Amino acid sequence: IASVMVMRPDFHRTYARAVARLAGTLAGVALATGTVRALGPDAHVSGALAVVSAGLSYTLSRTGYAYSQCFTAAYVVFLLGMGGQTWEQTVPERVVLTLLGGALAMLAYVVFPAWEAPRLPGRLADWLAANGRYAAAVLRSYAEPSREHHADMRRALLESRRARAAWQETYDRARQEPVRPRGLTSREAQEAQEALKGFGRAAMLMESHVPRAGSRFVPEAERFAEALETDTAKAAAAVREHRNPDWGRVEEALHAWGDAAGNGGPVVRREAELEKRALEDLATAVSRTPLERDVGSAREDQRVRAAAATEGDGSGPVHRSG
Image (tube, rainbow, N blue to C red; front, top):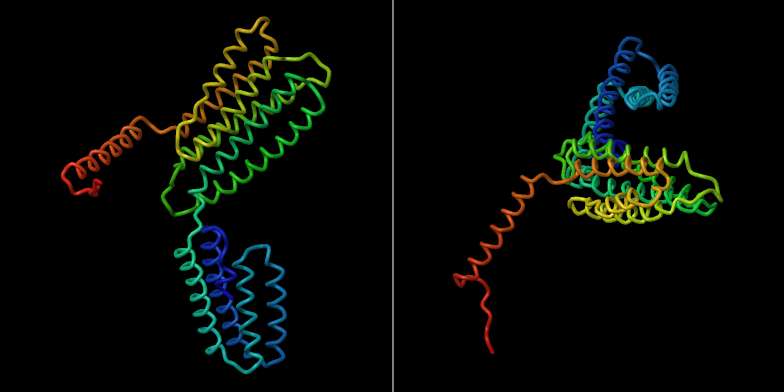
C-alpha cells in the first residue's frame, strides 16, 4: 500500500511523497507511543484516540501529505492497541513496512524511469507550431476581416494555450529531476520559453487591433501569414530533430511587405516585426553553437574514415562476384 500511495508519474512528486510518508509515519508513531506510555489507555480510550486520529488525518489531507500520514500512523497504533497489541509490536512493524514501501517505489522509478527532460523538445515544438497557427490566424483576420477568420483565431488561441500549459507542466517537472538534460539544457529551455512568450504577446497585441468584419483589407498580411505558418511548422520539426530553425520565408515576406506600394497596415507590420524578432530569439536559444556543429562534423568524418579504412584493409564484408 505504501508503494502504491507514494508513486506518482514524475520523479519529484514520487520522491517528495516518499520522504513525507516516512517523516509523517515516524512522527505519528512517536506521538502514539508517547501517548500510550503516558496514559496506558484501555480499549475504550484507544478507540476514542483512534477516531480522533482518523478525523485529523482526513482533515489535514489537503494541508500536507506528511501531516495526514502522521495521524494515519497514530490511528493504526491506537487501533491495533484496541486488539491487545502493545506498541512494542506495532511501532517497529509500521516503520519498517513504510521504509520498505518507499524503497520499492523509488526502486521502481529507477528501473522504469519516466523522465520529463527528454520530452522538452517535443513540447516546445508543439507550442511553437500552435503559436504559429494562432499568429497566422490573427494575420488572416487583417488580410480579410470576416466572422469565419475570427472563429479560426479563437480556436487557434485555445490550442496555443493548451500547448503552452503542456510545455509549462513538463518544464516545471524537468527542472526538478536529478538527470542531465538531454535535447535542451536548462538555459536553452528557459530562453526558448521567454522567446515564445514574447512571440505570443506580439500575436495577442496584434489581435487587440483586429478590424471588424467588412473593414479595410490588408492584403500583405496574407502572404506573411502563409510564410509564418509554414516556417513555424518546419521549425517545430527542426526542434524535434535537434536542428536549427530557419525563418527564410518570414524574412522574405516581411521584406516584401515593406516594399509594397503604400505599405498597407504600418501598425500591423510593426507588430509583425516584433513576431519576427521573437522567432529570431527562439532560434538563438535552440540553435547549436559552431563548436557543437564542428564536433558533430568531426565525429561524422571520423566515422566515415574508420569505415573506409575497414573496407580498405579487407576486414569489411566480402562481396562475392558472380
